Amino acid sequence: MEHPSGLRKGPVGSRITRRAKIALQKQRVFLFLVGATAAVAVVTGLIAHVIDRKDFPSFGVGVWWSIVTLGTVGYGDVVPHTAWGRVLGGIVIVFGVTFLSFLVAIVTSLFVDTNRAGEREERDAQHHETQALLRDVAARLDTIENRLGDL
Image (cartoon, rainbow, N blue to C red; front, top):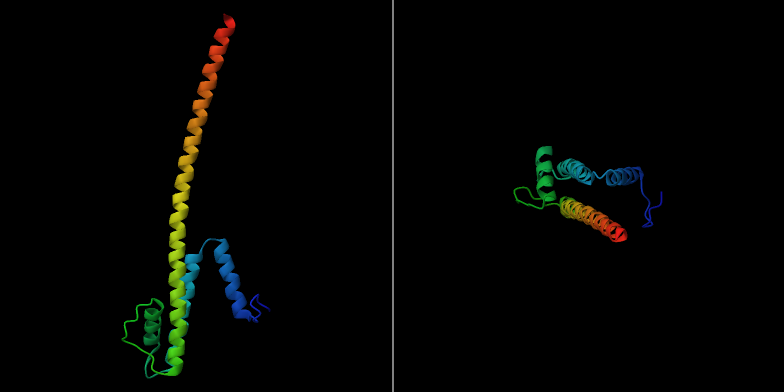
């Protein structure tokens, strides 16, 4: 399947893209990002353990390193020393920074939406109040006109 970038997408890429679109439509982007990040942590932890058993002696150590790296904390207690381990580390870092950027954008968007909703409610209340005042003024004018017409 051709992608707009000109690259071919496989079944996994198509599935991820489809799920991301569904998450956007249902406004569940945060849950999608958390799930995707957890999946990346587990997969990259496993890969790290498989490709570099010296630096990642167990699956748990690999997942721990991946979570710390995804979170951009970088404690330094577990560090890849092989070329493939460092390549994997670079990928995990980019994914982690991207996740945090999206997370900040989502939270900011929620604050902005909440603020806009409050402003809209206030504007609607002012509009209703203005309409009530105009009806009252119109009724008073009608009364004045009727009294003047009786003279």
